[in-house]
Length: 186
Image 1 (cartoon, rainbow, N blue to C red):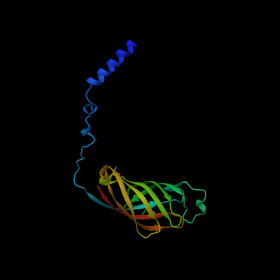
Image 2 (cartoon, rainbow, N blue to C red):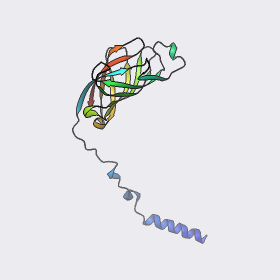
Image 3 (cartoon, helix red, strand yellow):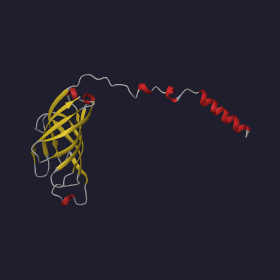
Image 4 (tube, one colour):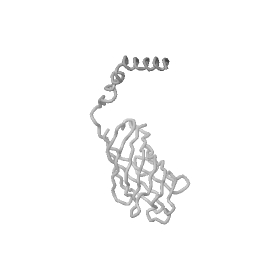
């Protein structure tokens, strides 16, 4: 019992002699610091997205589907993984400026509405190594559609903005060339 009393007395003396918890941490060094940034820059880019799901060397492949996907006119429930080339012009042999890497899925029962989760990774010029991230609905049969840019890396770190897409060409199999005009605030 005496031993327990000494231990309790020792613990109490440590607590009383210790500085308050708030003095031990430098809360204001991380919790309320400001991020100093330069003025925002707006960048506009135009390029072409080549999505090939047919042939010997597809750039997008189906990785999952629902039980009834094949019965749906919109292929509702299909998920595709993509690594599509981005080029300067609609010609597939034109200069490669990057890759569209990510996943898209058929999310509409009544219309071909794709949920796009893509990183447009640039591999050429002043944007080499930078990327923008797109997350949103792509109503593929609409003549023009808009999707949000929700982030980026490299030059486009902390980016936001929007991408306007317009189908340049497609075939009955589902291959497509899409013109993109993106406006990026970074």
